[in-house]
Length: 244
Figure 1 (cartoon, rainbow, N blue to C red):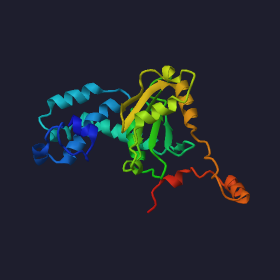
Figure 2: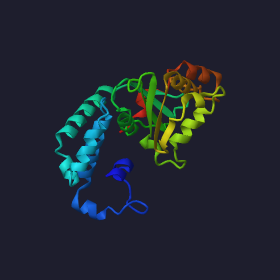
Figure 3: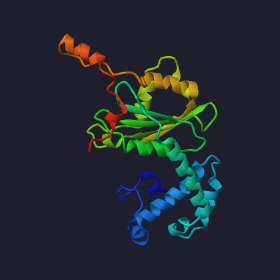
Figure 4: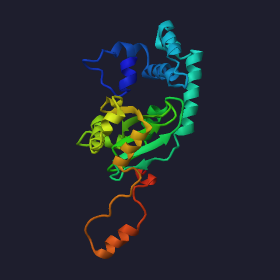
């Protein structure tokens, strides 16, 4: 359940990962997915209730038993409400269009869930990473989660969220990396994030040029260039939803 929950439903179960063929013959992927969701829910609440999840896991003889655990179900309902409350925060985009940033303020650990959700919806030729920043989880700190946009996952040049974050931070020459601390750009290449002081996070956003208009298109007649400058910002939200 741990490996399945971390790596998702599309993983091909080949070495070095465990052989799950017999497991999936006994329990459906849906039941395991639901069990993983329930186990994760208590720690995401504002109480960070890891104990309830641990006890439920120890008491259960199989994944199906977790699906009826009242404490887990209540925690998931609480998280679902919190996600729904904050998931509609409007994103802003970096000047180059590669990063979308959403800001929320929640005492619950819902920023990873919201990042995953938006990463599946936003789409453009340039977008690579969706970043959700939560200013309400720890006082004075910003907890943030990054996910690769689904539209970028099949590109020839793979996106590495950790390398992308570090590349932005390295643009600074005043010691920003040290000010952000050791919890910056942690995780793995497809799902990273961090916990950094609020002031340092704003410096990082400035380096990303979040909300700045893209440069005018180079070339063409002076009249065309003037017209391009007069146009509203092209980096707007509706450009990032896939056309049907």
